[in-house]
Amino acid sequence: MRRSFAFTCTLLLIGWLLAAIACVQIPAYTFWPAAFGALTLPVALALNLVAAFYWVLRNWRVAALPIGIAVLTWPHFQRGLAVHPLRLAPLAADSTAGPRVRVLSANVRIFNVYPQLRDKDLSSSKKMIQWLADSPAEIVCLQEFYNEPRTSTSREKNVFNAVERIGERSGRQAFLSKTLTNGAGSEFGMAIFSRYPMLRRGTVQFGKLSQNHAMWADLRLPSGDTIRVFNFHLQSMSMDEQDIVDSYSSKSGLKKKGLGLLRRFKRGLVARSWQVDTLVQRFERSPYPLLLCADLNDLPYSYSYDQLADRFQNAWATVGNGVGATYNGRLPFVRIDNQFAGPEWQVDEFWVHYEIPYSDHFPTLATYRLVEK
Image (cartoon, rainbow, N blue to C red; front, side, top):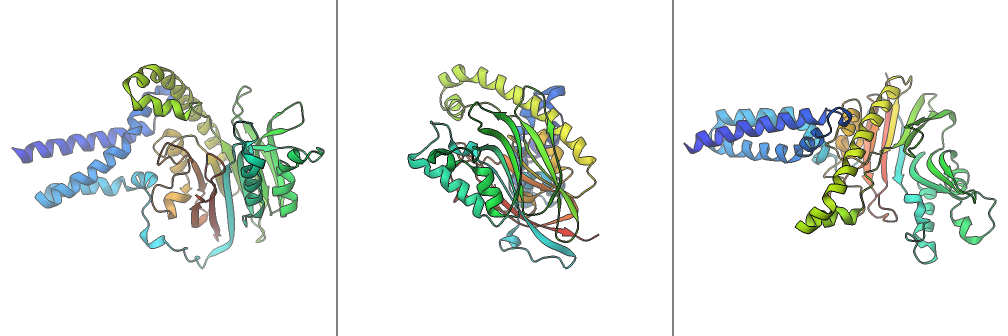
């Protein structure tokens, strides 16, 4: 009787797991509640492993079912918890791989320029910009970028002359995609910096009322190959971290904050799903090998991540170990910043720089090699 009940639970668990995987592939603009089913996927994956262990001890023949499902769904497991014990050290270069390309990506939170983000003597702003300028990365992609042009003479404004500091002074060509220029001439947007020649560049807009967008640049490598780098920032949830914490800390907090959070959650889901579909169409038309840097504002078990992971290698899932959280805040285990690479690339290394805490996102650095055809 106990075994019959356990077997029934195992079948229900497998059904849940397969349904959650199906939910991941449904865009929110067609049926947004599916996103909630997708969020249960990591729980279903973990419980399936528990079921496999249980049946190994009880009945090997039944164990084959959850074990087989675990093998088939392992790529989904790797999205949230990468396991590569043999890659704790840097991977040796493939003999057919070309020169290495180091890519740094970071959401820099406008270098803490707003008064509520500043610290004494603009210390975090100075350290963040200097660290980026000193980075050995040949390509630097920044989201929530901020720049104050060189024409300013005040000491404070010189701190935020980020285009010159990270670009020209560090031997990099700069491409700044501006979403806003205020009355003082300060610039907001995203940026790509490259030590390789920049041949062409452009932007992909997500609508007139949205500051979220994508930018791209074609770069010529020393080998003569041309690659295309995309830098993009998908729609934010527009949810305050404290509101999220309050909503699950008490019943009164859930009642007070829950409905508003749900509305914003829905708006973000819908926007990101069509934004990523727009980008995928652009990616598929690229004549060159692709590298993608992004603040997805979405978890690995989401439609937007799934559309990218189905077509590209996620750098962390390919060579990382653990969760690879990139959000620097009170919400644990959140990885919303990602780098992806096309099939032409070998991913050698990927690191999250937890020692750089100056933004609410930790920077990521990856090393790639273009594999010869």
